Amino acid sequence: GENVEQHPSTLSVQEGDSAVIKCTYSDSASNYFPWYKQELGKGPQLIIDIRSNVGEKKDQRIAVTLNKTAKHFSLHITETQPEDSAVYFCAAQLDYKLSFGAGTTVTVRA
Amino acid sequence: KAGVTQTPRYLIKTRGQQVTLSCSPISGHRSVSWYQQTPGQGLQFLFEYFSETQRNKGNFPGRFSGRQFSNSRSEMNVSTLELGDSALYLCASSFSQGGEKLFFGSGTQLSVL
Image 1 (cartoon, rainbow over the protein chains, first blue to last red):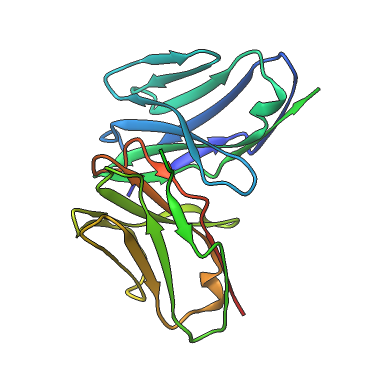
Image 2 (tube, each protein chain N blue to C red; image 1 turned 60 degrees about the vertical axis):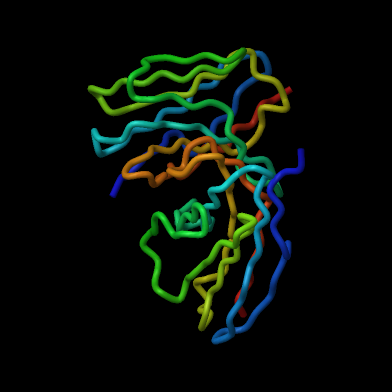
């Protein structure tokens, strides 16, 4: 199956700064890469996703980049705000199954 | 539009018992997937149902089973509970099958004593 590694496991940023989370995947056949945000006591929420035929996608303060050759993809959050504090998960889809990274706990300091 | 509803929110069971968890997907969604979330193993895929048929299955023992009804509601059953089954069980629905654009419920927290 697919193996997804995610770094860092924790990230603390000053409000207004940028945050970057990186993930790598093992199987080059993976073709869909979503990012989820999970707040305390809630289920994960899809924040952005990208397909393997696209290199970059942006939605307001959030962007995702994909490097198929290196098999890694990244989440970029600009102008971080306190409400961005949460656990973020990357995932890769292979054979119609999603494999998730271990998660990154992001803390935005006021 | 109502979100994904999971019941119950919390469950406490003892080893050897069985448990049934329920999930009501977003109206119009025909796919329901189940995931197990633990601090040690993270989010792991259990299975996916689409139009009442299991379409995909993760690497879990046969004690974990599920079903989907004609109204797309789904249930997950775990028999002969073990301590290691303690976890947050998340249900996710989507319009199409395959794990894309999932909408998750808040989960059922299962504790096995």
